[in-house]
Length: 458
Image 1: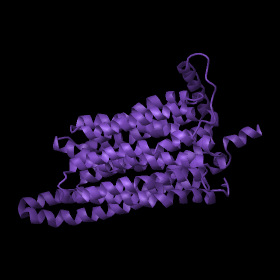
Image 2: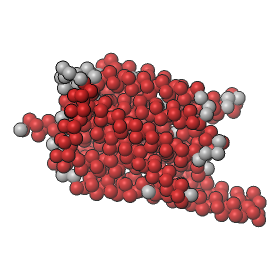
Image 3: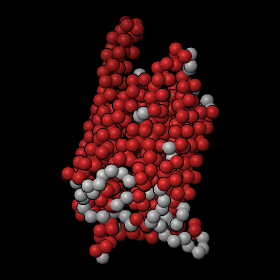
């Protein structure tokens, strides 16, 4: 689909993209980098496998989102409710993120993370559905991609740089790691709240369903049932949602488990955080580049490219982990006879090589992470009736978040069964392969014409 020549964002479109800037700090600091490493350390000190507990906690949080998303999404389509629900979820997310800085027990940290994640995920549901209100179908790929680019820019600039500076300077300033993490958590909450002001003030619900005279909740469930029937009858839409469910599973699991996986393997925390910052920086131009790639070769082909990159990420990630786990076992055996020197001679070269591979993976993920999510969001937006965007995005969120529940669960379960975290990463490649083939079976016409195009013709 051809994009409009006027690619400069309008004030409303820019205000919408600023929410990606606002909430991105939660993704980088709480979900992906700073907090998971700290949580894994605290849980490990209590005799608990931090990456496995983190995986189960993420699964629980996404299960709650799966239950709430379709109902709240259906309610949000009524006139005047979309922004109210966005603000409520924003407040819940920010408050419980802030609360995570006030506790030192890993169980309470996990509770704070689960509730804050629910608020974050549901606010993103309403934010995504506002895409139909702020722009036109032909501009959705570019606007959605610029939103992700703003998110990566926001997540990798001031707050993340401050976090890195604090981590580097902490020993000289006589500040312990716990205090640094708490500062970062507070900063994430404040950043998220402050930069959410533009979407609250400038973005308004353009498409909506009139409020019913009776119970809003009853009407929401009635509309919910209708949406289920409509999705079931629309085979192309259903196929796209299933494909999205499969490939976004791997994407979400990589986001949630990357640093926890690396920490379990014994990789250096500072280097992992720096590598993830590189991911954010690489993703800024690549997110917009994916929109331009979609313009040239089509959205479906661009999605295929992103899936292929993630398949390679899974294979390299498995090799990295398996080789380091094997080296660790060999080094422990050698230490029995040769001491620490024998251990270091085997383990340290493997660890350094794995650290390099982690940087390679960070760059690879950066090339595709924003693009595959942005194109999926804009493609879905074009396929649905704009006045019922929240209802449909509620189910889109189910497919995305339920997948993110399955991925960490698979990772945690396979890691537990095999005793090797590397096999948890390997399991994700099957989901990318299945997603690739289901997307291949999705009719091309849905990538060429929007819902409004087809509706106007009727």
